[in-house]
Image (spheres, rainbow, N blue to C red):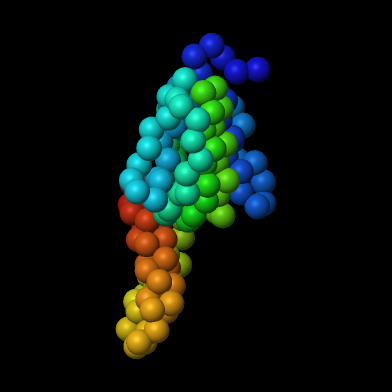
Length: 138
């Protein structure tokens, strides 16, 4: 049961449920910028891009997860985050993220006249840069 004036938050990946607890606030990387959700927030659904999810207070405490992409559903008393992947900063393999960034740049450089290749490269680059930034903040 949710605490008074606290959000019930759930972070789910295809593999498992990472968080299912109460929090005072949640910050999520919406496609158009970060969004902070507090208890009583208006309902919404948003697409998430690469970035960090930050939980504040409540049972969750102060926790950070780096995600690739996903969706968030916000209700006045509950936030559900569906992410393709989520890692704590200490779980990020910086060398693998750097290799992924290099691969994204390679896709970009070889895209030629193919706009789909540029879109693919942009996604790979944004996700790798986000992971590297999270890893630096350990």
